[in-house]
Length: 240
Image (cartoon, rainbow, N blue to C red):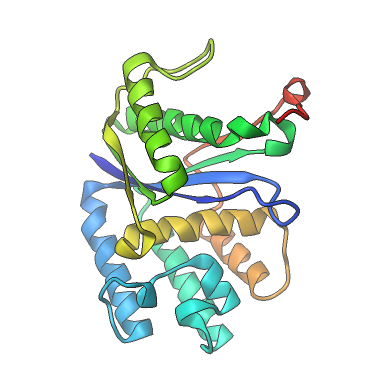
């Protein structure tokens, strides 16, 4: 069994040209060691390990010095971020799944649904490859939670959409949504997707350039499964 933690970087032009939906797939034997390492890291950095908004690992806040990182030295925040990247790389058994869609080349009202469908397909592929099952946990999004639940239920019953849709047999139950400050492993998924977005921005200035280089050295930028869409100009659309 794998627990699969999902987070996103939302489409927000001109800052962010893509919608990214990414996941970390933890085999059950990796869950406790990684969770304990995250707890120890929180205790070391914050002086407290109890889950709360004041001890949350959040990529954007770490880099921008916001929230619980306000007033903390930049070099210390960079060291913390590198430690979180090291935890992702620590175990080769942790699956990394990336879905990247480009809404400007799509019918924009459907891009989030398509990204979620592609994610479930890639999770299914990874579970078949590892001969395992997946339980999916995602950051809470009130606008999408009920839609995602209904979509996953449909995929499990009827397969995914289109002529080349996939049968979903290795993703069990439903998609569970929780607040990110309630789960260290979900926070690590946030670090993963935020790092991929930084890498795509081709930023070389400190500290982002250094963090992207660190992630590349650790092999984190190379997903186990991925989907970039669309790939053909026939999908271009200016429609809403």
